[in-house]
Image (cartoon, one colour):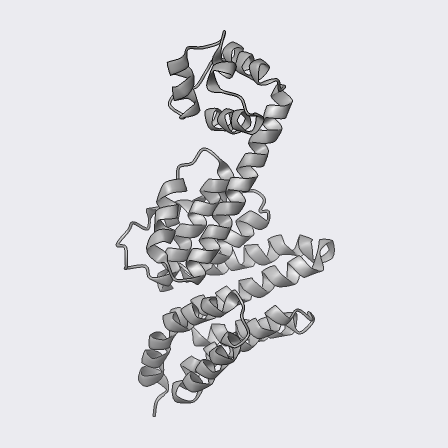
Length: 295
């Protein structure tokens, strides 16, 4: 990683490799160092910085900036792959970054894994071990920031019916962790709590706990009505139709399709997202309705 940053700085300043390694290391060693094959001892690293004409503090700034740029690019890539339904590439992103030395990139890799898992858990036939590791890390963390909260909301969608108690505990902890944001940043609070209930309702529908899903929707509705966020109001309308899909499939399938068609006429990054969710729930809702609700 350090070699890659040195390379970026060198190229930005228009230096040749020779100008940087001369008097410090050999040409071959330096080439391998930039390629990430070797680390370098502190004294020699300081020599490379001196040849570049920068201080260690400047190097740290460039390194942190590079990591933020890489994380932002990966976050945007994951979001785009998910919303466009490119799950093989999404899983490849997880494989590429799951052991990265940067915590932020490992977190994003976990996010990519969970997005594949909740969409089609059997498609790749991959292990649930990473899921269990993510849950364990979240449970052991003494405090959650928005990163852990966002990851936990995806975790909610991946619990099985046998793990209802654990899912309920995660849900309650997210609510508790979000309380501090209510007075700090109301916009963030309503967006996060809205997404939380959106995910919670979906997870309850998947395991056919319809009564709990209805109760969650009522709580969700009371909270969101206090916000004037258009995105959240659309999300709530979609959630209502999704819930009704399980209760009266013949009536609400065409209604939900009509809502999706209406949303698609106004270009938005969320349209594909809602379509994916509808595809996940359509057969499950039909099966539940025919088994339990149809008379």
